[in-house]
Image 1 (tube, rainbow, N blue to C red):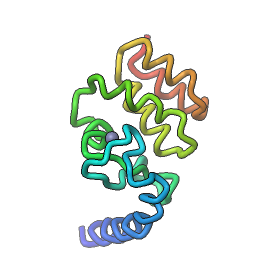
Image 2 (tube, rainbow, N blue to C red):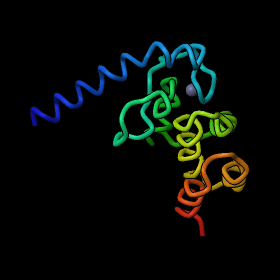
Image 3 (cartoon, rainbow, N blue to C red):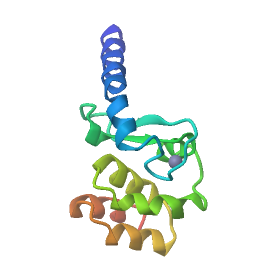
Image 4 (tube, protein in one colour):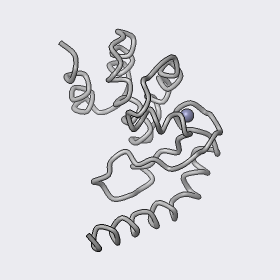
Amino acid sequence: MAKGYLANRERQEAIAELGKDLARRAKFTCEWCEGKGDLRPWEYSLEAEPTLENLALLCGSCRELAEGKKVPGHELYVIRSALWSPIPAVAIGAARVLSRCTEPWAREAIEESLIDEAVKQEFLGVGWE
Ligand SMILES: [Zn+2]
């Protein structure tokens, strides 16, 4: 367990080092909803190395959405525009949340976005028949 703890700690330190660049990129606003509350780096993939491409600066509310802790409501309309971000963690992270929504517009938004086709298929194939 000690090794895992250390790896996690190193990871947190790596993310903290990227924090300044991330905040500057995000212009100190949430990269999904442009909110300003409780902004923190969010990792799109826990398996990948922490890089700026793999991080999004998200507010508390959007982090809850990202982690599936909150039932998505009208805020999904707001994060739809994040699908157009050139930053993978921002766009693909938003697509992952939107893919859980059963409304047709959410599916259309993902289809129209510029994210990787294979990733799109992965999201749209799950939960859609
Ligand atoms: Zn937000």
